[in-house]
Amino acid sequence: MPLSSRHLLGLETTPKEDIKLILDTATTFKEVLERPIKRVPTLQGKTVVNLFYENSTRTRISFELAEKRLSADAVNFSVSTSSVSKGETFKDTIRNIEAMKIDMVVVRHAAAGTPLYLTQLCDAHIINAGDGIHEHPTQALLDMYSIREKLGRLEVVKVCIVGDIAHSRVALSNIFGLKTIGAEVSVCGPATMIPRNIKELGVKVFYNIDEAIQENDVLNILRIQLERKAGGNFPTLREYHTSYGITNERLDKNGKDILILHPGPINRGVEISSEVADGSHQIILQQVTNGVAVRMAVLYLLGTQN
Ligand code: CP
Image (cartoon, rainbow, N blue to C red; front, side, top):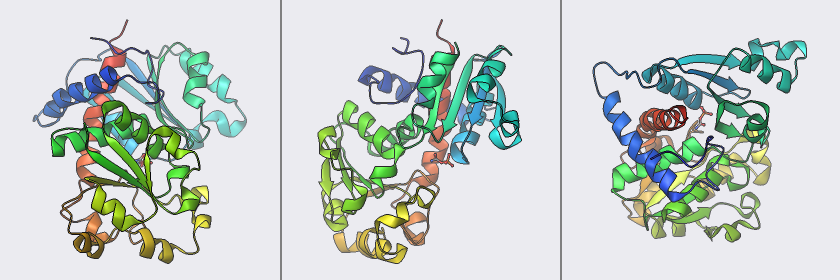
């Protein structure tokens, strides 16, 4: 069964059947990653360009590994070493890359809507690896995969996304994907970080982190995005940590066996304490492992379409 779209631009309009297909296919590829030889010939002869206009550790390396595990030719574009520094436009850059006969583009860009714009510029399959504060669909898919792997289901699981909701593409993709699949989604943070119309997306809002811990099965804790000026939304980082930081003391006080996710990178001592980031509730590095399998599934399902 193929995906219903030629591209993965976001989860807002991705149907439940597509999400399930990606997650189920990722299970097969996770088994490949456990083998001594972690490679299958599925995308032999296909070329994937990783077009990263913004910094990344996890997503870029995860996509490159996924492409190599599928035997695709992976090409990395980094804006700092490209002819963009000589004044070449985005459109000309894409047209030149496409002229080299490529099949797929994985794109990260600070401007929301860049992946959609790319679909109008070239014929390759486009995968959104994070566009501004819009969406980061493969992060949400790997988060969903990790919750399902740990709890055995996603339907009616109560997931609270904590922190800088207003600046977070991870939050938006998680809300869309989790709601589509039937999870109960909420957000928690200071009012300055919660968009005013968030309830229109069908999510509950908590302003008190202890209530959020008591009422949910999963916390997906977001990084305070200091580079997007998020630090201006509360008096000090110490105050944020005191009011919303996830600590062992806070988890113990609420007596909950709660699952902790974090997409990374982590600000230790701000949104999460080191003891929780390395502790028994969290599955942060399992999320990273699952990211390769999920991205293999997305690349395979798009790359084998006609
Ligand atoms: N989670 C995430 O997108 O991390 P990177 O910015 O390192 O890719």
